[in-house]
Amino acid sequence: DADVTQTPRNRITKTGKRIMLECSQTKGHDRMYWYRQDPGLGLRLIYYSFDVKDINKGEISDGYSVSRQAQAKFSLSLESAIPNQTALYFCATSGSSGTGSYEQYFGPGTRLTVT
Amino acid sequence: AQTVTQSQPEMSVQEAETVTLSCTYDTSESDYYLFWYKQPPSRQMILVIRQEAYKQQNATENRFSVNFQKAAKSFSLKISDSQLGDAAMYFCAYRRGSGNTGKLIFGQGTTLQVKP
Image 1 (spheres, rainbow over the protein chains, first blue to last red):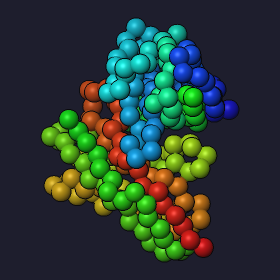
Image 2 (image 1 turned 135 degrees about the vertical axis):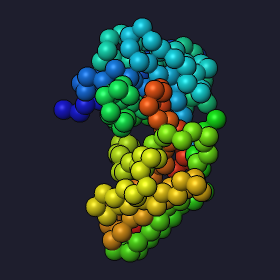
Image 3 (image 1 turned 45 degrees about the vertical axis):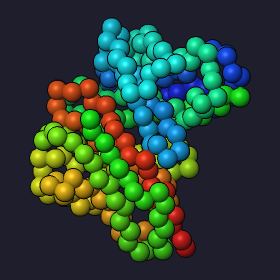
Image 4 (image 1 turned 90 degrees about the vertical axis):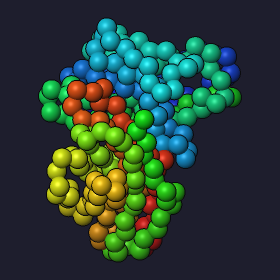
């Protein structure tokens, strides 16, 4: 089974709808991240979390919110979706800096289309 | 703020040949890590190689190697003996060193085509 899973894998929604993207991990990592990928822009950080009580905004957090329900679960919500939020969304996890684990492990991505 | 730039939107290489993808970055930090990620059509982000800034020796992973020029802030990826399965988008990424958030800063990506 995959270490980092995302649901749904693909979603089409209409402008103004609320949508939630979910991420779960079995790696036991404390840190979780949400990124957005757009053509020609690479991946940009939306939100990140060090634990269930520590959530931080990334560089493009406007229009998004997150919830860390448990160490293993980190959800991204679009309260009122708009077309320019059409993108590929990735969840990622990593260990804390003290563990010496430097890599981020990515989920399979969610393709979101807002019409 | 740190930035990462990949100036080659697309590259192509003949199967079995060697190709080099370019990446430059800007930072005032001395402690950091650099990464190359591969994204095949499946969309999965796969770590290809990692370089610690404090190490002078260039990292190597099988057919993949880097040319890390710290003073020039350059971090290129060389793929030797290119295979059809190497066709993908490649992202260069930067991460500050210890005691930080661990978040990655990505370049724009380079799409690599491998011709049979």
